[in-house]
Length: 120
Length: 498
Image 1 (cartoon, each protein chain N blue to C red):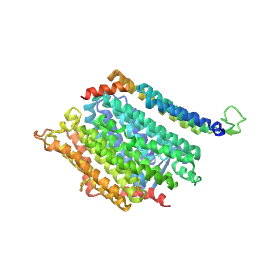
Image 2 (cartoon, rainbow over the protein chains, first blue to last red; image 1 turned 180 degrees about the vertical axis):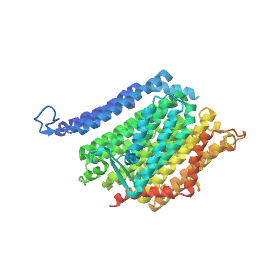
Image 3 (cartoon, rainbow over the protein chains, first blue to last red; image 1 turned 30 degrees about the vertical axis):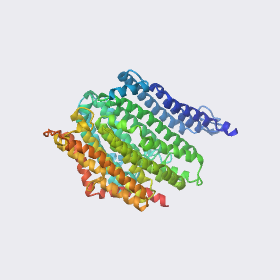
Image 4 (cartoon, rainbow over the protein chains, first blue to last red; image 1 turned 45 degrees about the horizontal axis):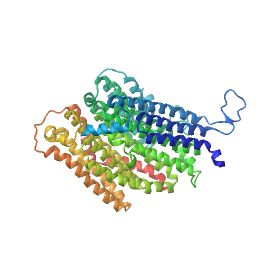
């Protein structure tokens, strides 16, 4: 139990991550898949940022009382990863839009049946 | 005067294509984006040759960005392991860019050619970054840039067939999951060691000599993420549709180089960093990578036999060929790693040549190339058909082609490790490769329909023949590829035996 409280950030991260993956795998709608992917990636951002926290640590900005410093590097890494995530979501949404223009639906099942018909 | 630039050659090979890609993105012209790309890639090749010269003198270059020393700053590392791949990369990218022009003009709107070449250079620069980087987080960034550029390029195939959009979307979702898994692994590794630099990581990991669960979890996340990206067997499903519905020029670039660069990093991570936990490494290699490679070889080949669409057939054969490479890498000794690198270099040429030839047929036939549509092509377009024949024979592994050299070294490596079952399976799979390639040959030369030969475009068949001739040359005079591969194995395996 004490482990659970001590590592609660990891549990939060796993919950978000599994939730995101679940949405990606189960949803039939392409738009929902993109949203699931965004949640999945956000989970990793939370994980990285929570790693950076040092107990009683703070950023030495606007205060002279900082005794311990939190690690700034994971924040910087995640800044990069957020940009990557935004680009991925943007490209994903652009593709969904194009799929909608070409198929007039973004439901996986309907598109599969359309493709089966066109193959015959 | 050029010395200033040459000092920064390791950074420039990556930065130059990325920079130029931003410049040509909005050029409305039909030809200028291509000309600028060609000039850029000539410079790229020149810089790679300069790196080769430097490496042959010093043996190791560590390029520190902003002069921040390695554990703190990002660094690029060039040594015996990656110089061979870097050189092949430079040369092949230049050849395929020559090839791409007429193909792009046929397959996409000419007004998009600026954007297409912008993405093309973006993919080239970021894939080259994967080859050179020495920082595990930096690798993730390059991985994602190359994935996003490739996905956009694949989606350009929608003008021909709207399935390209679905293929691109699936690649986006699966690729992003893979990359995110890799980042989770990086997070675990960083939490335990506080470093992202690969050389420093080895030093820091050594303090946990008995191994920690968190590190093993992190390593597993990283490896699985990279396996998705490298299309190793059960997580390969994004690859066949992506390669077969992409525009032909794009298939050529991706099939020849994209998975190869990631496989290179995969093996580097295994044998340079994770080597300090030999028990974990042999567990992974013996019980994960080895059986998956055998399955990939067998299933990839069998599915390829049943394909009607030629590009899809080649994509499934790629799955099998990636299986050969990972099988060689799972052997844990010098001969295995060396034969893996031999096949990385050789297969890049073979698959590149095959996709080039089939891409040209798609332009000539003005539709997707299926087995039926190839009837009589051997007489109609003899120059390209003959190149396709040679590349195909090399894929099977006939003597006098470089595919034979690959198979020879793989068999030798398997034989020294006494893996007779694998030898049998590789032999059977090579025989099955004859089946699917024979179906193509039968349609092309032995069908009833006979055509008179038609004129072929020299701008397209010359690059194809450059690749084809290199396949024959490296089949007869294989020393360069063997030397580079042995060099790579020397650098990687020396760490394993200590």
